[in-house]
Length: 140
Image 1 (cartoon, rainbow, N blue to C red):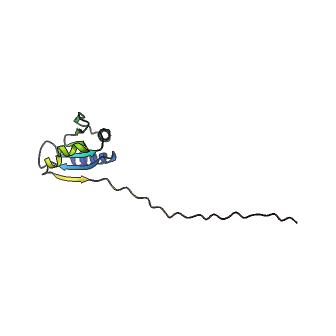
Image 2: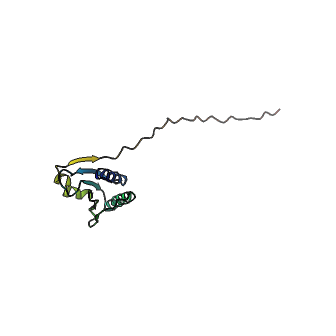
C-alpha cells in the first residue's frame, strides 16, 4: 500500500475507534525518514490501546504490519509502518510534545469524521381514541 493511501486508511481506523484531533502531516519534502506522520488524541490509556489495536487489526487484514511498535508509555503509543508513523497521544501529553509545531513546515491536513446521517422521521400520526359504544340491550 502506498504511503498516501496508508495514511488515509490509518486516519479512518482511528476515527472508527473514536480517536479525535486527527492530523496527517506530509513530510516527504522535509525528510527521508518517513513520508507521513499521523497524529491523534485520546481521552484515556484504555482508548489509546484500543485505537492502536484497531489500527493494527485493520491493517493486518490488508496484509500490512508495523515495522516497530512502542507501547512503553500509557500516554503515547507509536506504530511505525516505515513510510507512515502513527502517534497516539493522551490529550494532556500531546501538547507537551507538540509535533505539529516541531514539524511546522510540513503540509498538515486535519481529518474529520463524516457527520452522522440524521434519520428523517415522518410526523407521528395522532390516534384519536373513540369512546367505546355502549351497547344496551333492549328489553321488550
